[in-house]
Length: 411
Image (cartoon, rainbow, N blue to C red; front, side, top):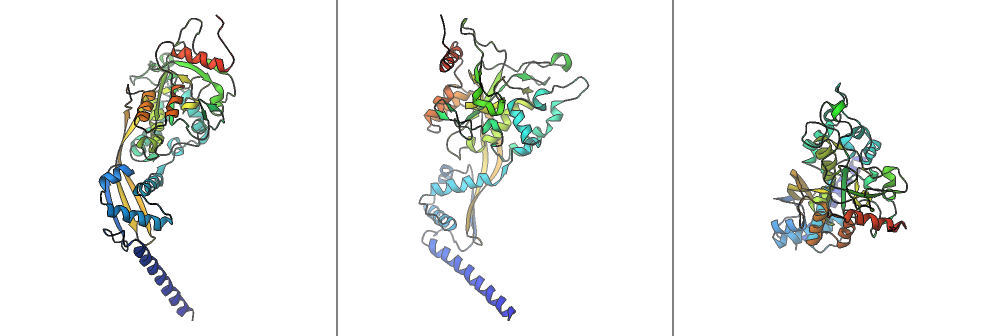
């Protein structure tokens, strides 16, 4: 009796699965004239996983209609456009194989938070004459990640690091400071060079004499730091620091500082958005720390953070990515699933192209706005953080800020 029951149950399951396959095929029979939905199928192209690239590479409208139908059957939804289907499939594809930011240093969340605040061993230590605290050894994991992960995988944008997920609740330049980077921009400002013989900064050997409190290459002026914008990462709850002399008009009184960042469009599938975690890793840990020896923060500001939580400065250099990918769209009959799979051939890190200047974070944001990729109000907010290098702009920003604190000039 149990044997007959098992055979009957198995037969019932076979009938149910067969019915499901037949119903899926029947549901999409009119749309799938170029593909047989009762069998597995896939197709591939070289390029980004985006609706625009898909439509450029896969021009057959019958294939489009088939995928829309199969997607709706798989997800139990009612999308009508191939763009919406590809957008969803590609977002899932990039999220399916992400390298965790905690796996870069492998030293824990507290270490990561301290590093981006400007503290911890990678920032404070300087090589000794006896060969201790060698950056290339202590942070060798960064080189490994660059060669084996950062050029082949999506690296997550680190929400566990308070500099990039501060949620201060303050309204900064018209934006409430919520989770993540509300301006679609982030940058670092480095105040010290700790590595000799890399043709960057003025740290030299012997370390004990020629690499004590040495400077990075100067590419920006600090205007001011509003400590309340980054209290969770800098551990300074209130107050502000001013880095200009309004009485004499002198700017650039802080000494050399080096700022560098990146920005990304609102579109979740733009390469600079998908790979913004890669950009953060490259700009902060690889290109500037291990390759140049640049470390430490401006007092009262994180070393690296969302733009709205950083020191207000004149400018910052900028990096963007160029990605080579292959994309496969796959229908699997067994579980009636439609998916996209992205294979990353290579990720290159290049100086940004901007609207009126290259390698300039604000100009990059302006270019994204110019092509309709970044909201105007976000660019306007960035302009309040990166105020420009023209003489007098830094002190003008200071005076405007002091006005919000009811501090005014007495002539």
